[in-house]
Image (cartoon, rainbow, N blue to C red):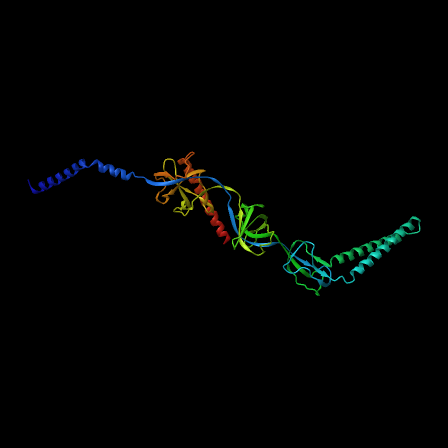
Length: 390
């Protein structure tokens, strides 16, 4: 037997021994390998139910006087008294400035005397007419003199009443540029009166958000010092600013003690139209590869489903999202270590209620499809709005 044959037999014998060695492998080793390959990821989950949610729009607001009026003189004359000081509270009908009477009372007395005379003359003309001794022209002239006398009395009475420049409503004397001795002309400013109760809060809102609020909705103003004031929406502009394309919004807030002044700034929270959403911990919200907001849900078979959500609000207890089934089990521990369609070992938290039907895979898949479409639309709309505002 030559050397080549011996080498071939040696190689064949080695291969045969290697093949036979597989028959003597320990079964325990195979079982351990199988168990290792089939080991499931342990996660914890909680049940979340849909709830009624009232979104809050936050705007930059500033307080304003409910009314501000420039009270002006209606007749000419010298100021003889200024009962109201700047910054003083004043009631409706109280005198702010007093103008000298001069001879206006005498003019009223003269006008009244003229009215009495004209009345007698007209009555006499009527009697003469009955006797046929007075013409129609004479009677018409007597009536004209009577009406002129009445106008003179009324004019003199109005002038006397206008000597006292009065406040048109309850408020505060903001400015009073005249002093005793000043001579004023008709139309000259006597004082500026502002009304601070109620207080008005003005803000601007975008065209995307104007449709979410309505008149008489609740509003809350938080001032820079932390104080809060509650009121309601009293005005919504019907025409946008041609430059900013924003709308003016006004809220009315009670201010009986006049503690809050005009010109104070703060955050105006407005309650938008109610909607249905889920309140979940913010730690459950993840980002997928496309940058969309998602959460990890688990169905009754322990299969992981990735559902897209839309963030519609925030609170101290978490975030409000839409796009989920009415009742859903969300992974609260381990959501970062599982993937779509992975089977896991689920344990529910003690505080979680498992009563009721569990969401099926079909329901979760349908919710994922719908919420993904909604999320894409919302993001596209937000991008469009952002580019529009720029």
